Structures are given as C-alpha cells and as structure tokens.
Image (cartoon, helix red, strand yellow):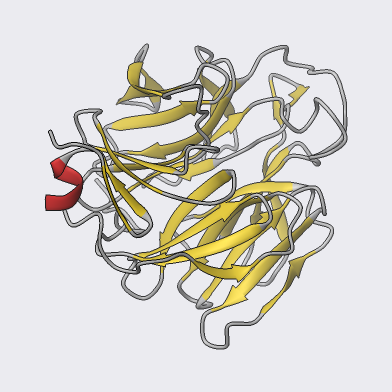
Length: 309
C-alpha cells in the first residue's frame, strides 16, 4: 500500500493502481459537450462511430460523432431515457424512466418494448440494463423517475419496491431476480458472466450476486462500500477485472477484483456514468452533471461482446 498520490487527473490510493497502468493515458479530461441539465447513460456504438447519451430533464438523447467531433440530437422526446447498452445484434437498449419501460431500437429505427410491467403492474422507472450472452435483458428499476417531475413523471409505485429484473429473450417474460436492494442503479455482469454486480445508491454500496443456472441469483453480498458519504451510480469492468464506478461527488472509483479501492479519476462535476468505447475500447466516456467528458486511457474496457457459453 502506498500513500495517497496524485498525478494529473488520477489519484493513486494503492500501488496496484499504478502498476496496473490505470493512471496513464490522457493527462486531462476532454470536454466533448457541456450543455446538458443532467447527463447520463453514455454508450459508444462501434457501427456508428458515435457515442449516444441521455439528457434526462431535457427529455432527449444526444450523440457525439467520433469522426467529426460534432454533437446532435439523436432522439427527442426520448421517454426521459437513462441508461443505454447494446444487445448481441448491435441494437440499442434504452431504459426510459418517463415511459417506465425498457425499449429496443431496431436496425430500421423502429422502437420495440422489451419490458414495461411486472406481474401486471407498471415498472417504476428503469435505470440501467445489461445484456447476457443468452440474449436476456437484465435491468434495475428504482423509483428515481417517479419521485418528481424532474427526471420523469411523478407517480406512485404500483409495485411498491425497487428491484432488479430479467426479461426473457424468447417469451418476453419479466422475472424478479432480486429485491434485496434499496435503490438498484448501475448493473454489470462480470466478464465471465458468473456474477452480477449491482450498485445500490441509497445503501451506499455495490452488491455482487452469483448467477445461477436458469437465470436466477444468489442472495448476494457487499463487494464495496462508498466512502465519506459518496453514492454509487453506474459500474463498468475493464479487461483485467477491475471495476470502475461512477461515484457521483467523489469522481470515478477503481476497485481491484478483491474489492479494494485502489484509485480514482478526479472529475470537477457530479459523476453519473462511465463507459468504455472508441476503436480500441480504451476511451472512457464520463457523464457528469452538464457534461460529456472523454479520457483516453492506458486500460481497456471489458470486451463489448461476450462469448456464448
């Protein structure tokens, strides 16, 4: 363990952050766009060479073009969309807080509903999604979009709790996979898909669950706890099994696979989301309050498409 040290935008909390080449690459954050109200859900789409993200209160999705550096509107209105990901066919999966659903944008631009109800009741406000190699869509459903009109529409929860669900790719059935979180937010599968990591914003922790045969989860345990009152939002793996976490007012955290906080990226605004992209998958796209930032790094994100078991 080393003393805390800072280098450019990085804060080294453990020697593993340095020896693992985490504190390398760009020496500063690059601002790609800074005129959002609350930016979320950045996603690099390789086929388009664009990054799309959500500006939730303004009810729009934006896109930054890698080849020209220009920014334009991808979709408006956008159902107060939040998190975005791709399925195995390269189609856009979006969590629409305002429409209280998870949607899929087909290759021809039409939009298909993946999930909008559980046991006949409307979802709260889907937040983030992860696609398993079997095609199933797993998503978190906190109440952030129904507590006020700022990020959706104020309403009572029909379900009465905030949970994580799995939508079956063949039948469309929505199954509850865990109800043990207070406010599930970001979620991501481990690179081997044997575990599901879920950030619990209100509990101030990240939980990890074993993924069982048939698409169910174990009871889960705490992987990491937020420090000094920080809160966790979305989470992403790099290709060496380290977990990168949007820690809101505490920048971007980096956790060793054993759960040790080894370093962080310093960000001047409240961080909502991080994702990896670019041709080499080593460019971090960070949304924070009004801004989409970029940081070309010496680490590489986990593979975008997992092998089928």
